Amino acid sequence: IGIMRAVGATQTDVLMIVLGEAAIIGVVGGALGISLAKGIAMVWNAFAAARIPRFPFKPESWFDFQPWIWGSALVFSTVFCILGGYLPARRAAKMEPAQALAQN
Image (cartoon, rainbow, N blue to C red):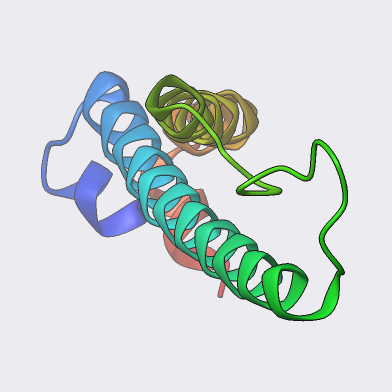
């Protein structure tokens, strides 16, 4: 951050870079979380189909999520990562270049 500011990056540039990194973390984390949840749901469905005896009104699938749920989970993870990164990004953007370079 100190080097970017020293070579001419504005506070807005630093803020956008840090928020962009937070957004990337949110998208990747959300995608990994969705993939893990889908995998666990598939394993549980296979386990339940094999182990739970037939009974009236037994569902075909224990976990049947609509696509909008997966999409909204990805959006929420991204938005909350950006919100969580805003204050540190603002603090980093307001830091003087010499102060940022002096800190390890």
